Image (cartoon, rainbow, N blue to C red):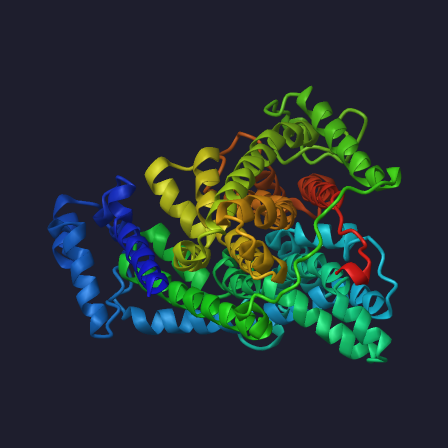
Length: 577
């Protein structure tokens, strides 16, 4: 009951904030609606007064919210302020399109996750599993690949150059392929890494050795290990589903897909409150449903082990002993540091219209952009805005999730609601109150990025507390605080820290996507998302300028994940599992 109340309360607060958008932006909503209805009409006082009277703006935001809620109870989502058409059909059409796109993207995500984990599952079933983590640098790069960059490259190469698939619209199954691939690859890579992080501990448990000695087939052992490893990450599946639906605004914009995310963004920009509130309500209901299904599936997979406190705890992490394990992160860190330091020595704002769109040379190692500015300089100076903000948001998310993970009933409902809010919509709301900028983008991403970590922390905490050996500790008189600090916290903090580090490139991408859509850092300040957006128009002419920020983000991903891998799952003897 408490979780239901938390969800309803969070939903009410979010809808209230959305309803206050015109007043938060300190702009006259009547003027915005007039421009959306007819850009040519003169904004006379009479015309603005007529719009205010038609929409009931003079009554104030609270009266508008009350009227909208009363209509909602009767099943009426209202009428669009800009088009004059009912909101319900528009929301249903956009949600149906996004659900179809989500299904295709989720299928791609499952294929990518299965491909990254296949080698680990095979070796674990045979008893030859090493200490390496599945996916490696490939998984890290895929997890950090920007959806909008994959979409842009796919559109240019597959759609324009090769002509294999349509580049825009939503008229048939062929229009689904490129957007689904662009959205599904990063999400699948994240799922694959999380599942692969849990698999070594499952294969180290005692029952695996007993099954193997009893002659159980490798297929059944692999299936059992997957069933043991999946519950800890099962809530992530629901969160990924919602993220695929609500966070695809950039992809929907690139391919002109009329999905719910694009509908919500357009409504927010035009301050069409009824359409925006209907779109947000649809996203929230989807988030609640996906979160509930994820939790139910997890409890069903754990079965009586969770209820009877008979689960075997996962092995604790330890640092590797070989020096070779440090070679990859050290090399990546050196390359990034050298590139950023070299760029910091240059002027990122110097214009030279006679040297625009130059190819790489000694004078301009990464070429120049459309205004003749040095790409290396802008890449180096942009690192402070992108990476610095991403590190701050990640640290905040880790600390908050670690605390909320020990109170899952308090955070569960709010987490489902927050996760269903697309970062772009949060960016619109924060930008309305604070104005677009780096700080506003960081706040927006921080507000919606913590649910995935919190869900993981709650799942890990619940399983750690259900460990069988803790029953003996309690019987011996150990206090709950001592058990939490001595046993539960170490088993939660390590995997959660690796998950947080794995999310760092995704946070950087979210910040970059807000810059890409004009809601983050504003030009001419250099920022990696802005560099991607600015170079998208001339990627065929100056590919180096377009790919430089993408490669930098990919290197950041490989560095963070390889650094996280320095804390590995130890190989334990089955007898002591």
